[in-house]
Image 1 (cartoon, each protein chain N blue to C red):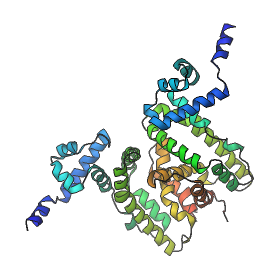
Image 2 (image 1 turned 45 degrees about the vertical axis):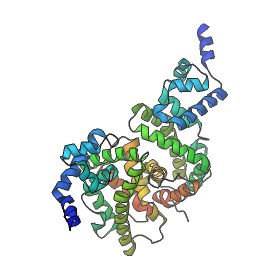
Image 3 (image 1 turned 90 degrees about the horizontal axis):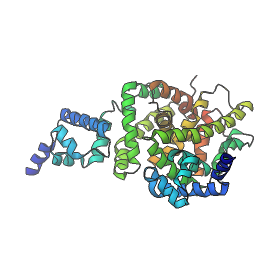
Image 4 (image 1 turned 135 degrees about the vertical axis):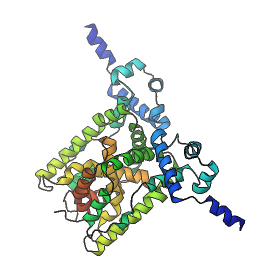
Length: 199
Length: 199
């Protein structure tokens, strides 16, 4: 009984959770991943470090969950009736300003992932795998509708194609990905590679 | 006359240049870009710092030229008669071991480019622009042969597609790009997006 009470006490409300994630993203933008400390998160959110560790285990998990919390929807809920419609709707869900903010954040995190296995694992488990799961659901419906052949070799490269669009523009062209850019990339590259006509 | 003599004295032989670039790449693998100093290059290559600065201007230029020197060929010299043949030949020019070494080096450099505008500019001028120039020549021949439509929208995204293949595999899958992987990526994504049949 004592244990149940402890578990209950450690649970936080969704409002409090949202507040906390927002503070983590703020800190991340201000100082970057490497300089962000659990102490700073505790101070800014007026929480105890013990609560933070109990609830999230560590910095990598807390940061990646904060990023995920900012995502407005789950990809697999999108179902417009065509693959092109689904991919365009996915891109339209974030306005350019949000996309630019998230893209700057993700670039910073991607740089750190390079030398931080904890963050890489949290990123893969909490963000990439769920997104890939959602994308696979979208592709599976396209296959069932007969839009994409089930043995289409580009199916296994969807994430590579998409990352190429996001990351190359940010890194080499020093421009944030915009909806207009990504939509034309999907039409010019992703859909033709999957054998879907865009005419 | 005195000036001519000075200019001649400051010129270095191709052998000496190759030796110097190899030492820079060695140092880069050992300590990374940020920790690499012109002093260390001067010591390891028994040159004077004045010579290094006179010849290369600075660290960013020296490093990027050293990387470029390791590239075994110029893309536009490849001319097999088909776009697929040209792209495969381009990938076959580096064995997996070289590709893995270069990929590790490039990942390190890409991370630093993120916060270093000098390196980003040198990278673009010395490496990316010449490669893009070569790729455009290869694509232009494919257009002239009638393999690719001149208004194909994927033409402007070739670098994004390719970087997606290289970088996503290295970053997310923690595997170096291999010839086998990149060749299947070219067949599954790049050629279909350009409207070239791979059957």
